[in-house]
Length: 431
Image 1 (cartoon, rainbow, N blue to C red):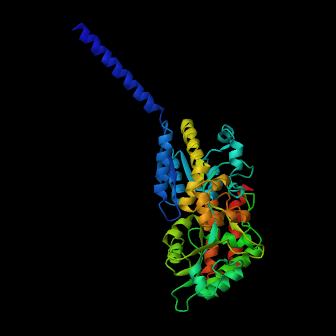
Image 2: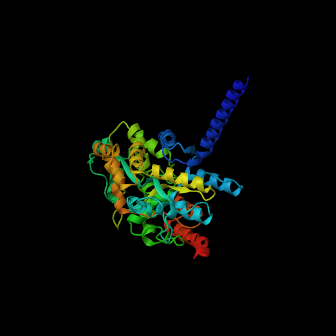
Image 3: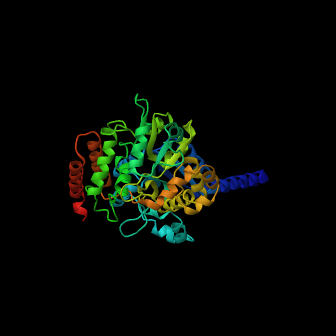
């Protein structure tokens, strides 16, 4: 009996010790919530889930819960609602790069400075990102708040088969605004079955138009987040040209063109040339039954020009310190050259690290399909996307002005003068 009792006590002790070890191991796992949006077609959720599973397997002390949170505006609103309601929100998230100053003002995020400084070769890692992408990662004092991940520029897609059909060189993308207009005239079907050109003017109307502004001589924003340049003569001229494509030249549908409808119209052969994000490239190539060309946004009077776009990775201030540390490791993984090479190949988003372009599968893919390198090469001419304080209000103000001109409600100068006045009023308290 005594021996049995000793054995029983020993077994209980071992089980208790095992239980304690299990509890200790369970407590050692830091669980973080990662919110991400998408603004393009394709299996984005599947790709992110695969990354999270691989990261979790390689980092047993961290568990990443990847949560698809809708579009960019949806994710911002979700975080805003949770934090304003007394919650913590996610630990790490992808926000639009242009939301930076709103995120800072609302005290939602933490700067990356300490994380970068505590990481071996932190400065070298940051130097490996394309400089154009860092323009929307820093504040006016050059403090880094976001790490590029889901980054893009708008590019021009064109149907090479239709170019051949109308006698245009399929290997030469329209270089200037006038080149694009002349090509669009040839490509527009008289019976209304096909448009020569489609440029979306909802969803992100400021973004696609920003290419017209930059290439014609003046970006909508510079270094300061308290000042915008909406009604400069070059921008007025750019908006007049944009509106005339549909209202005067009839090479584009009249009225507001929907963001999500444009790639579908292109792959269906209903539009010969479109502007859209490079993040749509993989999905377009997958769905098009024709030879797809990709070119820079055409030149205005000042040459080539495009805004950067897409989202950056941010750590939430409401996250606990140990979760922030885990979030930084997840960010390092997602922004690593290896994952960026894979991400760029699978989606069409631009791999944000320069070294990623020397790695497969992206290196081989870009050699096989040069369309993938176009947006990367366009970064030489890319400028800062429209980011200011009260950013959503500012972007909506400008977007409404663009739409008012496209629909014929207002002329370009009136609309942009009014937008400038409204923006100046909004930004005045920050100056």
